[in-house]
Image 1 (tube, helix red, strand yellow):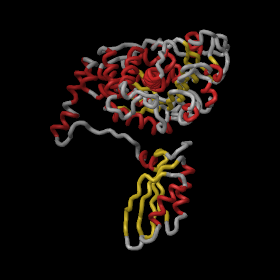
Image 2: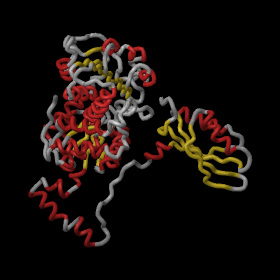
Image 3: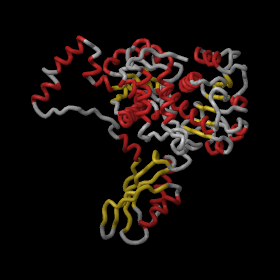
Image 4: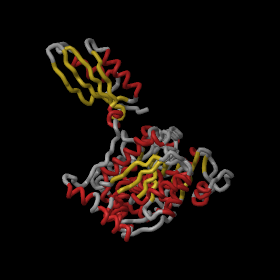
Length: 469
């Protein structure tokens, strides 16, 4: 639940009030007394006796929104006509569409765009498949693929329920990088079926963005698709998160005058995001890392290690710490959480090293209260938009794919991910850098272009395969 009113729970209440009297002035007071925030008040129809007014306000959650409506209805003379949830209104009919880039105003234009003229273009591609990147949408199109098994923080809710999220992802691709992306929501969670389906649709796309596929299945899906396809395969929950975390940590360590090679890092979360974040931090020079899952620290002595956890045990926790998360946090310089809400307290953060850095990225409820963490840590970041230093994947994936598509890359390398993270960190200038500004806004005009340029340069025109740490 949001702790303060949020636009994501914004409602518009259409109501009538008497044209005279105090009813109009009482509307704002009614919303505020219920704990809401009025963001707009529009008179949509005026008469001598009645005024029709749309009151738009932000609430904390759906129950709070209803409480606001009840408070408005209690104002003398008010008649409620309709209550609209603005988020649901935005999603009506979907958020994206396909439209033609070329005019089809007459027979000549139709003959070139479609038959018979299109046949010549098809035959040119038949002779040289690489021409598909030049002559079709392939050069600028990404498939956003999910099986609906790990959608946001909502869990395994299925492909239909995942569709609004994937639509939003496609809209972000267009808004921030001019890329045409399309949601592909698969009604299967079988690895073989997912891999085969993506393989056979791949000719129509210049890249594959895997999204919200649960671990450990996502690891195998990505690995196999990278081996099969000649276009980039990027799992945003893993690599997008890792890029943003490394960029933010790079700047946070500058703020506290520490370097990544020397700090002790404690991580909570060994799933898809945690695994990728760890690998990129190690590639960037991190040396002293302890990773914890719900059973405690990952170490070589545990007898429950799968392939992914075994890799973590082999590359971290050199001292063999076998305790819980709270013990692992003690004396740590950095905490990175990509796990579950409320697993630490402010008192736990107080046991960290001086000038600690805390990234509590579980969303919507972080691993530790940001307010409590800020009492003891020098720099705090979350995944939320209502606190400074929001770690948001939209800072990474549009620019990454823009660079990959421009370079006509056939794969993603770790060097590209490091280049993207360094470019993202560099968007924040030395003059701007501070405890509350270690990562740029998602609306900063230089983010996507800087990341794209770095990836494009790293790709060197063509890139093949994916090199793990």
